[in-house]
Image 1 (cartoon, rainbow, N blue to C red):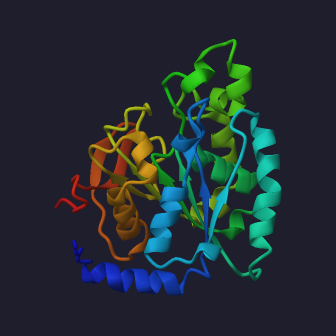
Image 2 (image 1 turned 90 degrees about the horizontal axis):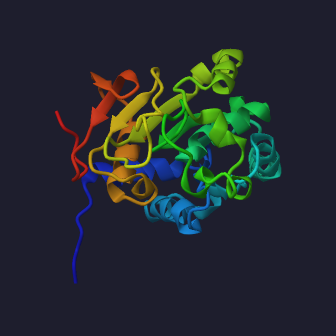
Length: 262
């Protein structure tokens, strides 16, 4: 039988994280598949990692939205789900939003449109798309005859720019509230899907570069999960400046074994 030793800092941190889970429940937003298999957007592996490390299932929520519909339809689909989640807690409770891929921008935009930005404590992106893409439409969205069935306007709004007008307007309109939110983004130069790969990086956030992690693996990789916990939740971590795809960002660099480089 194999025995896996858990570093002391993990034991200490996860015990404290578990104790605060009621205060900061977590809402998980999946990515947009564009016709890809459902398994590619399934966030249950991420949910399982949180549970394995002491976060009760009752404080972890997987929301669903139809990425084949337009942005307004996405927001309307999320409205009752988010309202139901928030109703379970006191009015003072804030939430951590964790979005994979398209779920990163969907999480922020939906909360803004629902006038719920004040409920966000942390905004975390896992290979997140926030500041647009130069690449092609994902999956079957790239085929004109199939696009209406697999792809809403959210993809058009994000493509061809790293400053999507609808997002820049939202950021300006809600600047005070969004500046208050703690932002953390994890991404990889070897993403294999995103261009630029660091689309989720906020200049006023913690940005973590992880080598050799494919886009889909961000929702299940133990390396990504450990990096998220250590950098997005632990206080006192130092940042360093570096150049990265979309511009100058502050970010950590980790090796493939989940150890922070110096």
